[in-house]
Image (cartoon, rainbow, N blue to C red; front, side, top):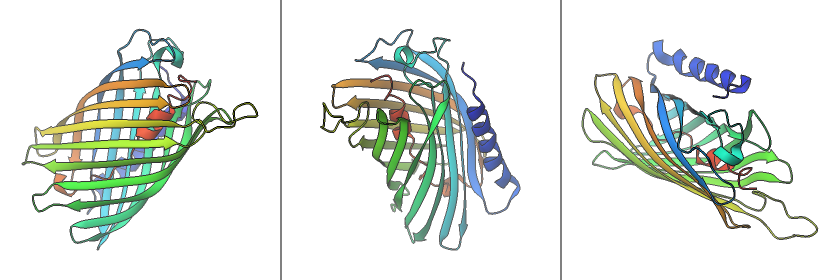
Length: 288
């Protein structure tokens, strides 16, 4: 499994961010980790030895100041590429995001803004590269307790200037519900588009835009085994499409892990930072 200085630093930052509030009053949130198995396909290159396994760590924390809410969250996923060291044969290895959110509650509704930095596999790079995402978000709690939410932001992830560039938008809509004291579940749909330069940029011979698009469906579920500890499971299907060459990369991924909660589960925000755009950006090089 690849190990990089940047990922080590990111892991340490996650630990500091999410460990600090544990002893503080009025903060709620969670820390989780586990393993995943991902099956990859690509129409542009030959994916070998799929499926692959890896690990994930994630966390979130939030606090209300009257009607205002401040939250921080992050997620890191690292795949074991079986020492192949070639994203053309495995698909992307690294993905991660850390985000800051701030907004105001209006009764059952919330409206705010967020800014995030994300990691993705760039062009001919052994280490993950960094991109940005910033935008607006909102949620509404229905009378039955289910939360509906939406997020949209401008995203930039430059794998290689004038060749592999995700410059466009990423969005997510979803729902989350705590069914009882033990069971909760969520469903979300992420989508986005890099406007004109996903795997190749327009040049003197080709002056047309060359966009790339992605979509990702995610189903989450958790089961409380104690007042603080949950078993978490997730399934995600990511589809990345290069509209210029009609090439597609896909990831079908199962996650299983454990989550430790501090504070009431029902108070934890569903508005974590979308990561699908950075996972899609990791496919720019394999689909080039």
